[in-house]
Length: 340
Image 1 (cartoon, rainbow, N blue to C red):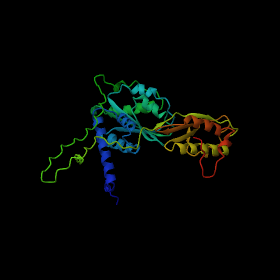
Image 2: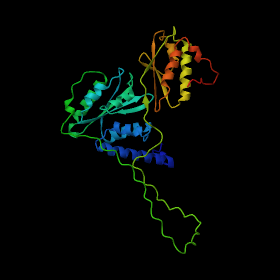
Image 3: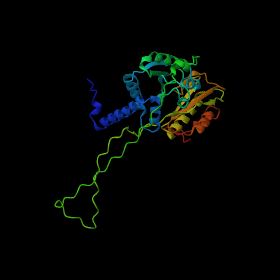
Image 4: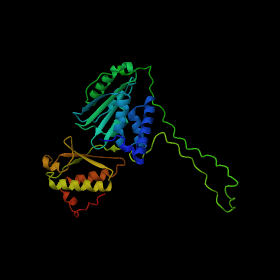
């Protein structure tokens, strides 16, 4: 029988759980004041105050179990690249709070406030067949019928369908502003030094250094600040045209060596390759498909927190897709090309 409390049996496990509980409590306080969960998580990620692995548990515990948001999930039948209409349509919604959870296969869960165009643009695009879950909660519990309507409007907007103006989601009498950020925790107070007892010890000499004053235990912070994490971004998709007569096995090997070299230089970044609207999980498949030939266009993007070297990567991939692919095949066995 698995013990649900085994993670609390060590100091590190207990402290990690306690830090997560404090983080969730702080998030709940902000949501109760009218904040949107996607906005809160976005700020925490930028401050490196939340890990990516914490987002899914927070999402389920807060929106579903605690606050009872209604949900609608779908696998996108089309690629979504334009988000202006979604942000424009939802920007005045104040009778219902909505959150979009995009389940990216490499980046994990990304939360978005549909009203914030900058959050949409940071994801660049939503790929076909990937999972999106929409959440909605009416501000007034008596208007729960608005939740399903809001979910359906959001779904139709993602799919590029025409929708009504959605005036039922706006009430001019309501003012729903996000609360100000919580103040930073106050530093622990230093107690006054205890008076010396005359008979406890002989008086120190003039040359002796004074004893350091005792410090009190620091107060627990309102929100933990773990060092890992950070806001993960993804670049737009860059095109690479195939100029060789056929993207054959030599071109495939060249691309594998180029990507390997890039990863060796930037181990925290990921390279994503696309062909014909589909993500390529194995570069070898480009040769097996037999569909990549002269004039075709392959796409790639890079994801990570501190993205670098994309222009050089694009230049090398272009050469690797040309008749000059041999330049990237000359390397020692079990060694990586030094390209970056």
